Image 1: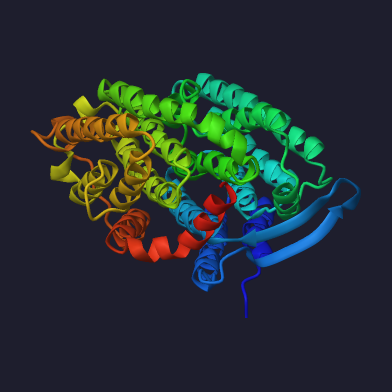
Image 2: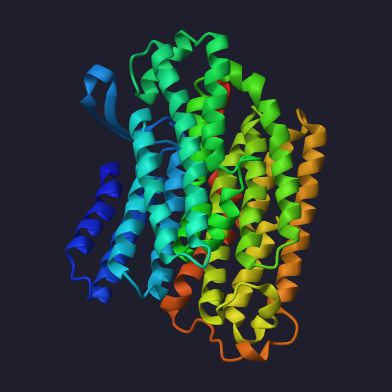
Length: 490
């Protein structure tokens, strides 16, 4: 029996419909329905990941239903080693995000409806092998984020929601122009990714056409990935968003940008990739160092994590510019590792903020004394972000750096310096927030008590350690798919 990919979309959709029909005042039922929906989708994503045959490679469990044949649009789902791992990432983060949403007390029904729409859209984007449906689901995932920040966000929520929306809408519009150009000039008369790959392998786009379509796709989706200098929406967006949205956006949604660049830019326009990606590699290192230095000045924990997230996207961009299997393996691995780590860090920060009513690290002093579990998890998340061996981030980043060394030696040195900056600001954050004398005002704060309270943090931390200690399992799963993409680029 093989997994049915449509069920991954259907399960949260059914949960959404049941939540919509539930009485608004029955918040316990709403939370349970939402939790069950994302848990079942998570379990199914684990099944897909485990059932994928990495030896055979290619797209598996494919479902293809023509939708608008005249335009070459079809409901086409499938997974390879890359997006099956992203499904696992989304499943884990969305389950943890729903569990930590118990702190939401107002307009609970609307909150979970929007959260489930975001989850459905993200699953759809990762599963789609049709450019039209990828873009459609990409927008479905993005729209609720604006509403959730504007309604349940912090003090500057209106500004944050508007800035995030303007940037991401601009990026989506730029990417749309590039995708339409790809459709119109390819000659395949199809939005189907497999049809485009097969056609362009035999009839590549003229290089002058590639050279204007490629940057539109890379910049458009690069804005989602926080490509410098188009990153400024992200720190304020993450800081003012409700915790679950900070987890989903920083952990998963921005990875859609990297995924789209791999699928639609690198794989379909390799000649333009070789012309443009060295410039992207330079911008990647600017991402790493500049955003890391800005993070170094922060006192607000969510802003620090926001700038740190932007900085670490530079390693993904650098890996995309390597044109070798090692670098692309590192990119896919880092998409997973950073996604889990970022979700964990934002979840822990949200837990402390809910009780302390502040994100200022100077006012968090000594929290390890009254919150040993939360404090320990945060320290381990920080060590993972700093690239300490034993965590998934180390294995992923070392692959990116080794992959980049031959082509971008000096840029790689700059990227290594970025890891030093990361270690400095994270160790400073740990010292300010969790060590030192306990702030008397916070002495009454309580740690997580029940296993249910600890579950989302323990799950994410376990995945970081498991992937860090057994990286070969991850690399074996993705390597056939990444090797195929690299071979298509040469």
